[in-house]
Image (cartoon, rainbow, N blue to C red; front, side, top):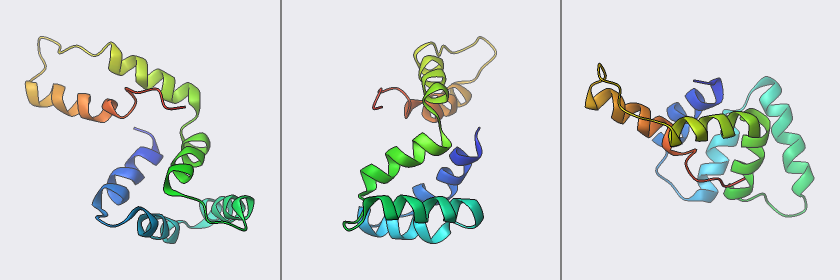
Length: 105
């Protein structure tokens, strides 16, 4: 699992708020190089605010390149339950890869 996916699981999925507030929350978590990257993204969208959907796209482009997303999408499409794998293990893998199922980029 890439660091960006761990970060997403720990932070984004815990937030139950509006998309606008979610973006503010996520931006408040950036430090170091990620914070510098975020400032450059914000400046690129000025004078208007970047939307949550736009943020997700630029975040994926930066931290989950297209080649990686395509690979994960193929893993999802080819996913089968192995003989030694429990239903719970298969379900966990399915859930982890499901976000790559639809080609949105």
